[in-house]
Image 1: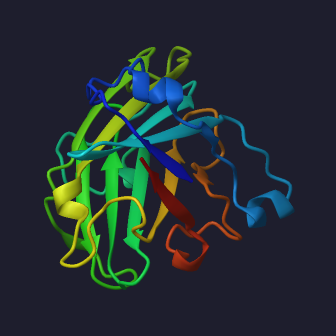
Image 2: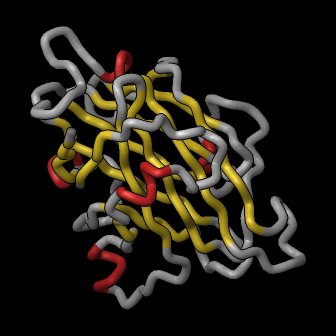
Length: 213
């Protein structure tokens, strides 16, 4: 997955109208292969775009969603248990540790660092998020259209001694979505890249992140 350099910083307002997004590759989310094998189909699609500059690594998402839910009222919660959320996983290829970062349609965020697989610890990386809902939030009586979100991760937080976040650096990435809603029999979990099974911690299956200047 490619993150292109942008001369113009992204305005983190939840509206994907920045020049960086017009130039970015759109990556569609999909179900994991285990869900497809049992006959599931992706009911509500989405896509992600990536960019970066000297200060931040950016992710912008656009999701179809007919029932937008986000009941978590604070940052640093396990929002996937409380409604819709996008999760951004970033991992240096040479290190065991990796980041797990959340944004919700309510504009809430969480920032976790895992020093090793599945060992979750709170760590503030300076993550910035913003979101916009096309419809109503937390009202299942009507039909919504979807939501968008932008995430900005400080490059300084991602960089490690001897391993700066820059072109040529070896990183892996996964973008995942929990989609809750009244019309879904169970939360719909989708991602890019496509995983062999629905487990967002299959580190070996994360995409190579190409940081392009």
